[in-house]
Image (tube, rainbow, N blue to C red; front, side, top):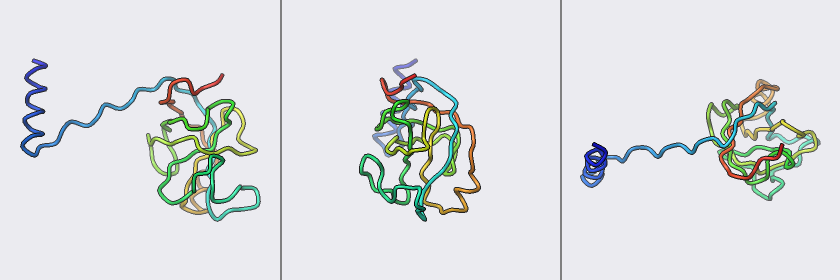
Length: 135
């Protein structure tokens, strides 16, 4: 049975069909975090248009600021919800003085109104990168 399914998919792909979507990477763990949102226009509290790892904060980027003692920089994680949508994958590329413990700050380039309407919400963080979480 499995062989016939695989053969059918290979034939469909070779004649212009589409291959099945990739299986999503499973969560290594899930934890509840408090979340806020940040982005332009920049205030005196925020660092500016670059992350702590040197990445430029531009429209379309999916970055979060984390406490690197909790989630290491460079980790991939999926958030149950965010100002950009639900179940999207982000990269931990930034830090912040008020980001401590189980708190994340989600980058959005949608402006102050979008950030203010997000406020402070609980989100479920699904870590996708091995060895990147500290208790």
